[in-house]
Length: 211
View 1: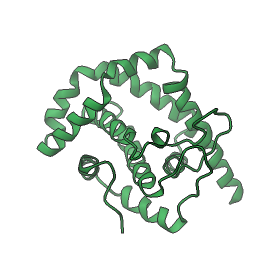
View 2 (view 1 turned 90 degrees about the vertical axis):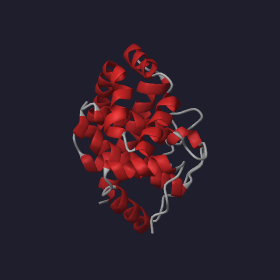
View 3 (view 1 turned 90 degrees about the horizontal axis):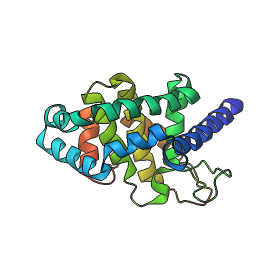
View 4 (view 1 turned 180 degrees about the vertical axis):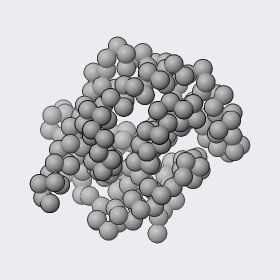
């Protein structure tokens, strides 16, 4: 069991190190083009929240993001390649990587500054989850690798909830949540529908507490 846990942690660390390199620290020309093609991600997230309020994610939001289809297809392929290179279809490994990410308990000495793999390098509250959810929902409403992104979306939402509760800090060895608490968050968020997560994301910077 200890070997499995060590393996999960190493896989998560390597995934987030590589993912950051591919899309932030040392992106390829294709990744740069895709990220630029998205335009203002905060504006996209704001549009998404507006459409949630209107009950129009599957209609008006789909129309909003239709012009981005080619960019989203390219970005989806690039990001899913990173997932496949590290998780090889293992959904549990993928989920654990997002749980580590939310807890901020991956201290990576390969990085000079921002050693902790976490969303937004410690901004409080983190805003990157809202951006990512708006992007992946654009992919699902446009049927771009929709099943894959729907599954990943549950892990994004879970990581958002975990980080909102754990409140990790950058540059230090953060303590993970108690296993029972993490299990409760996991059970709740993995069972949410897209519509329920849409509403949670649109409700504010942090989700409502899970009992």
